[in-house]
Amino acid sequence: MIVVAEDHDDIRYVLKRSLERAGHRVVVTSDGAAALEAVREHRPDLVVTDVDMPRMTGLDLCRAIRADDALRHIPVVVASGSLLPGDEQASAAGASATLLKPFLPAQLLAVVAGLLPPAEVSSGDVTVPSGDAQS
Image (tube, rainbow, N blue to C red):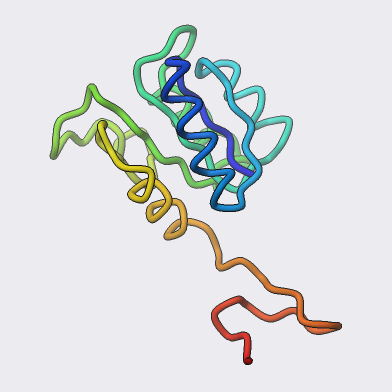
């Protein structure tokens, strides 16, 4: 499961649809504080967050996740139009990756795939990582 924090309706919709089409379950929120509540409730595999949002910024969300022993292992992708190339704010806050807007859904999916463990494919009684399944 992935928690998405994005305050713009259109961008939130595109993120949700792109991730769902790639096979992920998605919980969407419109600000950082709601995202932190969703992270605490759902314990997602990954978080995608915008930076500039009401109630709590994405950088503050990332810091809050990193400060919580039960959550700090969760990868956080910061997707922002307000950061410039080379800006270290996201990594300083503990972000696992940064995507600068505008980006293509394929770029998001590549970053997400790189941060999540390989999906496991069930083959009868044996579960094998998807990359090792034999035909």
